[in-house]
Length: 320
Image (cartoon, rainbow, N blue to C red; front, top):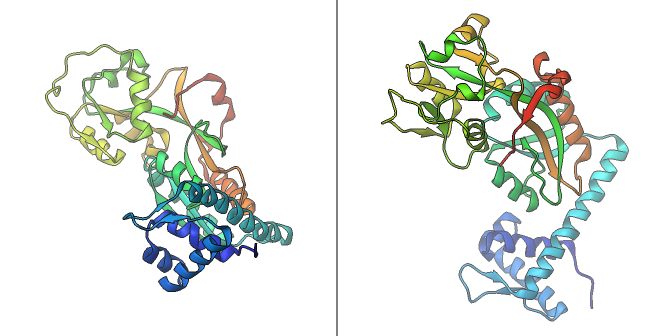
């Protein structure tokens, strides 16, 4: 058997991801005949058919799927060689794709992006907002290098490196009864007038987890149901005298102390929190960039989120 080339394996991986020879060729910046010829040549060398071309979209054969999985391993290890050389030279450079969940992106990104790009100009940082399950899927398919989301996840092959703990708080409408309290507990909350994110957001599930033992109470707006994919939308609804919502503390960083006093109530101990981490594949490609990212995020945090003593008096909620 002649040697298998990395180019051939990259073509196979591209077809596996796109399920289309034409699309795969474009992603690899080659002509379709060139890509098809190289895959056919590999099939002849191996003595197996990798793709069932009669189906639309094309599908891997049973043996092809096994070879594709191994091809991903080989390609990732080849990338690792390049990263090891960069680490040895002390280089922090190259393209880095980062996924971040929507309930973190608008609040956390402005804290560290400017500093990171200034300190590491040789890194081409590509950031995409996406939900947790997509981040995990993209990591496993080697389509992104890391994610910032809520942990623990406990997925095989995924490493979690905690950044900080983000406490929950209640954001209340003007004249809401809970404003009479200096601090709130889960027993004070109602499921009738709370605004929630829509399905698929882990923050929604965490909010429900806090309120799940609460009995329903009479509510002036119980005939109105609305779910959003954006925490800022929920805040605007609350500001218009509609009920309340739960927010991460990151979401009120720009509010003055006087404004917080009018709209926000913190929880009594034990305080519900979410743990925020940077996650990445266990193969640990681009180690130096991940370490730089972690350092920049932690350095950018406000002092109240750096207080490790808070960890001794909190309830950690499941990430769902």
